[in-house]
Length: 222
Image 1 (cartoon, rainbow, N blue to C red):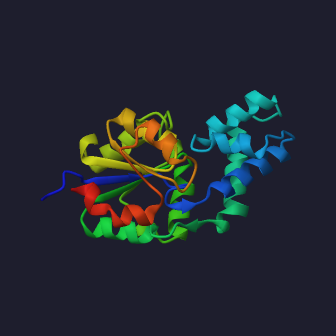
Image 2 (image 1 turned 120 degrees about the vertical axis):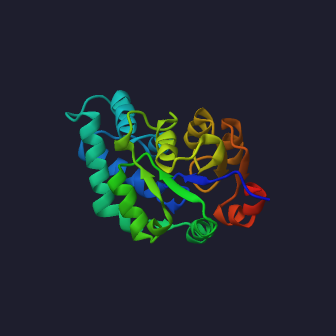
């Protein structure tokens, strides 16, 4: 039987790579340098959104610090790249999963709430980039996840319709964006959200990790 699925759209942080803690630490350090002090749980609850959205939320709660949301987000991204990016590791089975999808002739997109340049750098550092057909970063769209714009941009580049794609992500924002785009969603419990939250957000399937998804791939695609 031939699958109707032609493309898989992956989130990156918390889905393909274990980077959530590095991002949180980057935010806390960037805020500390700006003399504002959000706590760990507060920052973690904001993960999955674009950097500017996160910065805006922090500034709304903690008051002005002399920086705009754009400036604070830029400082955080610079810190992440300089001090924390080396701590990131690819999740087990990330490379194996991308490789087998690539070998089967499926298009692979990575859609992230981080700037495109940073996404590409992380993918290259983990040698995942060679399986990826297109990358969409937050700086390429007007509205980030949970808005569907980033996913729809990736699909338009691949010339694939929403019904011919699947989104894989660890955050309710990923699932909500997929649902809004008319794309089937798979939740992975390796990052921000548990199985209950992912299902409530609209995930058709939820897996513990990428290994389980890898093992159930034929059930998903056919």
